[in-house]
Image (cartoon, rainbow, N blue to C red; front, side, top):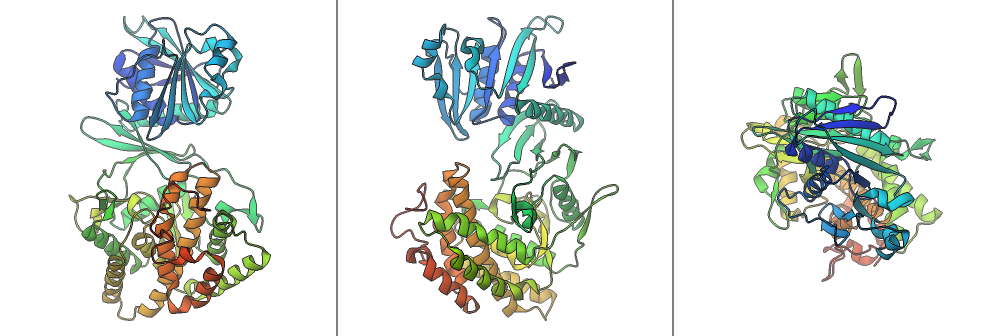
Length: 533
């Protein structure tokens, strides 16, 4: 049975959902768990037997990713807490609470900090509920059947818009033919986008939720960071690049349904098999070779820079220009250096930017090609049933630009999240060069080597800043475990003879262990540590 959201007349932030049976209750719980998460508050109300416990269990199980998880009622303990891969979930049942003093005794005001808070009998909390929340009231719906319920959902504050987006997403899912699908949350990237796998017995699809990116404060020339570095601010660049890659005979997801204005897509599910395996994940050589062959083939083609999105809508690929590269490099100065206890003064900044301007000049003079920008293991799907280059599935390319061919090669061979042994890196780069020279005997091998080292150093510097920012600003410390690897890549890249001046600057400013061959681990690891330590 599919799920449908019906708007309540005269209440723009309120919807009703008919739940004819328990599977429908579970499906609503899955959708809510996929759409909401840590730091969100959901309340459940209704008479005894209204279905609150069934819905709460469905939400907890879906949030945990365990369909048969034992979920006891918190009626007697009042509070049950779950530490789960997505974060902490707190399930509260306030039926036995009768006063503010009792709320104080259980530490109510701090209980949901940094947690997904699920509250039954929320009326007992009085005025101490979070002002921004989703209220869900369950009532019998005897007109639909003896076991049916009707859920009344009301979004308060920002939850009104989020609930409205969920209703639009549900409508899109219905239109795509996946209305009866189970909703299963997918761990996304570091962006504001979120993903849900829609699962039917015989097929699946991916719901992509990509809300309009708000423009941040101006960074330079009156432009925000996202505009300076040409990050996609809506879903149209993804659709454009998706169509363009498919037109080149490559495996990008087919579109099942799209709402461009809302930033919602239902796309083909390319599968779950990646290009790495093991614990910790390690590259599978033949799959990395296939991925590098795809790049070599693509970079040897004449590619368009104006891409169709829909009738009378086109997307022009921006140029990965010097301002964009420098804005990304500033992340190292703004976040990584201070975290290492070495804030950059005006002199250090100017010298850094001057060196990088000179280093980037020959790279930017090269012929431009498509730069997918996030061409690394998390975004590559292995599709063994397909032939040739189509074995490599591509899923993250909305920030694509026109720029140097070496950038995506470095993204793959110096994977920020996976250790790529130096011998394998050299093999892959050599394999790429051989492919390019087979296409064009005049391919500039020496120039490519310089460009590769430059893009490697630029990308490593940028990512050191990004991952530190994700920890310091966004509360995501798990990115710190990758810093030693990225420092190793930086040291490799700075070893190129034509980057000697840059290397001198880095050696003067960074701690010596940062540029050591072991990435600064020196017998220990940065995993989970503050980068300033």
